Image (cartoon, rainbow, N blue to C red; front, side, top):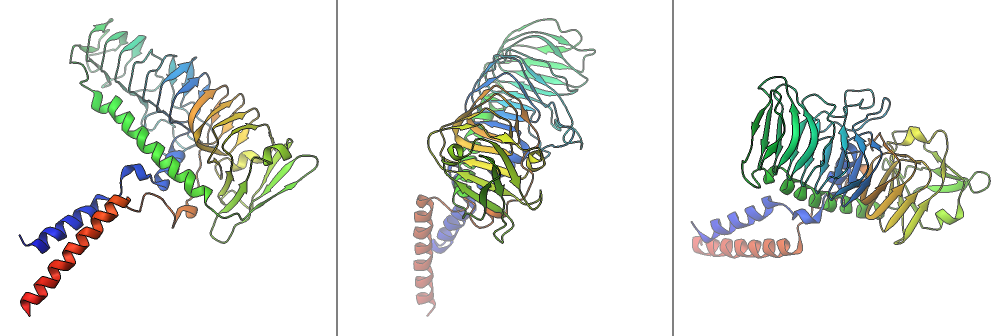
Length: 398
């Protein structure tokens, strides 16, 4: 093969390889917020329900929680994600349900759990839920339906409530429990399912973090088009103005939370106009604004982007999605929308629906579409070799 052909192959390989995953993709981050009601990149202290699907990259502590409860009026984008995915260990009981996805089908279109570490156990109130656990599984009972399979990387201390031999329980270690009609396959070897549990969740967590950080960064750079006025004493009204590109932007500083302490109202021309609210500030925030009665209609239209915050405490109900990839948040009242944060101390419920509109604000500025500097250097070098080879080839022909 000629040097020209070799150089062409090398450049083609670089071009088709795409950018490094660490660069992040804002569009992918936004899609994750459409599909997942809760995204916690790190650890979570649980204790309440999450109406939609959830991804927790770290460990889960706290008390009994419910996932996939559903909502009759607002839902999430249909996806193949499990009802609950956790990268680390799960201590409290996690109950998996299959509630209404905004009145259009069920939340858990791919019901089940994917746990990278150890799992204390829970109730799976969904027929045929997929159960994959990387570590040990110590629960009282596993209720199985026909054809269902449970894969556990470590030991199992549980009873399987099967009704025939079409249910299978696989374990890397021992199984201590009654089969009750199911088939037990023990001692398959340590780590036999790591590729589909702990390693898979760890990789997804890294990608989600990159994508959400890229999304937050992109949104923070949008030019302001909207404004805030006051209705009565300390009652802010956000007036969303379309800047001519199909979305509205309001850029705020931390002073917003000291200037206003009353009731927040949204003034949008329609529920189909995306509103991005960027909040600058690296410190801690307290959300104490009471919601106006009509705010719920805009749950799936509004994203609050706390792109620098380290912590946020929600003391009143919040309408809209929360994007804070560097912050640990706490709540003692419901958050109604997508939640994408670094850490979560849950003291209140997380409600559907998730962000549901388009992404015109990402059309020409989506990160992750430009190669890394080292890749550019290799591309330039490759093009140089191609050019040199072409010049020599033309000289030889002449």
